[in-house]
Amino acid sequence: MSKPLILVTNDDGITAPGLHMLIRFMRELGEVVVVAPESPQSGMGHAITLDSTLYSKKVTMDLEKGGSGPEAYSCSGTPADCVKLALQELLPRRPDLCVSGINHGSNASINVIYSGTMSAAIEAGIEGVPAIGFSLCDYSWEADFRPSENAVKTIAAEALRNGMPRGVVLNVNIPRTEGDPVRGIRVCRQARANWKERFDKRTSPSGRDYYWLTGEFELLDKGEDTDEWALSQGYVSLVPTQFDLTAHHAIQNLNNWRLHENN
Amino acid sequence: MSKPLILVTNDDGITAPGLHMLIRFMRELGEVVVVAPESPQSGMGHAITLDSTLYSKKVTMDLEKGGSGPEAYSCSGTPADCVKLALQELLPRRPDLCVSGINHGSNASINVIYSGTMSAAIEAGIEGVPAIGFSLCDYSWEADFRPSENAVKTIAAEALRNGMPRGVVLNVNIPRTEGDPVRGIRVCRQARANWKERFDKRTSPSGRDYYWLTGEFELLDKGEDTDEWALSQGYVSLVPTQFDLTAHHAIQNLNNWRLHENN
Image (spheres, rainbow over the protein chains, first blue to last red):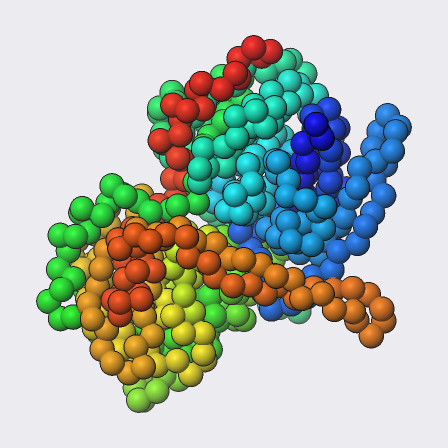
């Protein structure tokens, strides 16, 4: 039996340590092909390249600890572009799994909406490929990904074994544990939260006003079944995430609006 | 009583005819402030500007049929950036409604995932502002927005009257009717669909391979309660859309995965 084919991508770009770690974990589970952005794409949401051209090139990846690297491509586009190009052009066959990450920074709660890491996973999910986005709650380029090893491999192996519920991709976030092992894995819902933005307004040398976006994360959810709660307790959070955005519970309510008088 | 304050934005940029039409419709319902991207942002998904600066400038809008234009700003960022900047910096007070569009092109079914139009509405929704994205199923810059007038004003007026169900924004798509009035408004769910991509591979004058993304829309859903069905019948589709992406129905299933052995 041939080994499963695993597409590995991310949004921090092909040089990111989190990508290299994820490749190492995945090579224990299957044959890996890497298609990742040539430059960091954080905050790209589910952007795709519509009005411009895409480039990709085969690259050699030097992973730590020797051995030959996997087949790998860099791509000029967004994470979602990488997945589209991988599935249509670059992969030798349909992959059994797509994993994205490990992101340098949290994609829990409302961050999923802005996440390039998750947009790659969602793109694969739309195409019917089981997919998981992995993120570590540590923005540092030198973040320690080792405590996540068991959890990442366990979740990926279970996805290969069970397949994925239809229309679902997994959003996995890993707590920062200062070297300790994680406490376990919790299946969660997305916490209600938002960012309290503040714009830092400055003036350029030429006298033009400009802004830097800054902000503070604001958790608005006290539930103990949320991803933010699990992470705060040292657990890996696993949220089944869907791309049918319909708020089915609101349809009844909206059917009571006066929408039919003038139409 | 003061008039409601309506924030108008879009993803086709501040010069788009669809934006100008939406401004005209909204000025009949309230006081309008416009904050829109200075250049087209289609396919930007929910991108935000994290690692670079944002500019905005006050602009004069000349709408057809005379009269003074509304207070208006162009912004160097994405649609989500426009909404963040509007709410935090540019608006005189919290708006009563945010409308985005009218997009030149459909954002029904899976297109909602890639939509800059909807990302602006979702950003407002996350901030607790009632929000609606409007899109016309016609990509032409010369598209005829007049048949949508009643439906757009009716839905916006109802949103002002009723408020919005919590955690919900509206994704409104308008059929192309060749000048006929629309048949009415249907509350729908998002149809299951995807894009069958094809990459058009070419070689540059310097010998470098590049790709254009092309594709065909593939409807995978025969339901008569979907947005695609409503549009095919000449109705405006209204889908309540949420930014809690949790697939709650999948949590039970995932709790049966073997996630706890090695952690």
